[in-house]
Amino acid sequence: MAFASLTRRVAFAAAHRYRRPDWDDARNAATFGVCARPSFHGHSYAAHVTVRGPIDEATGFCVDLGVLDRVLAEEVRERFDHRNLNLDVPEFADGAQIPTGENLARLIAVRVQGRLEKSLGARAPRVERVVVAEDETMSVTFEPGRDA
Image (cartoon, rainbow, N blue to C red):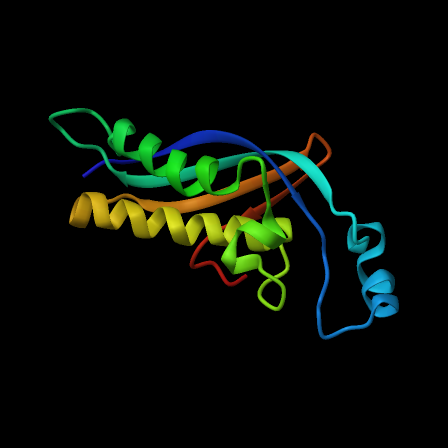
């Protein structure tokens, strides 16, 4: 059986700040710098989601693009676009995870994988990689299941 990987890009704009509520302002500022400022800051993000699966002999696809696009629209664009990650996304609410690129990429991978499995069952491809870029100069890569 032949396998292939497919990558789809999703863009969204969101605001966030880095802050641990159990630390005082001085420690947050020393650790996170300007990213800890109370006024938040924003990015025009690009998320590149790569899935891998067997190539279906009847369609030639490793994933149904219609399903993947619906999942990405709901789990990435609608969930994050024009949102304050700290205030509008429960996984990043104060006291939960810090909305770093690393945590954002991991959350996207988990949410997309869960939705693909729910939609496609045993035919669901595996989320192989999520790359989240905050801008043209920095991106983070999360690869589910890779520890090293």
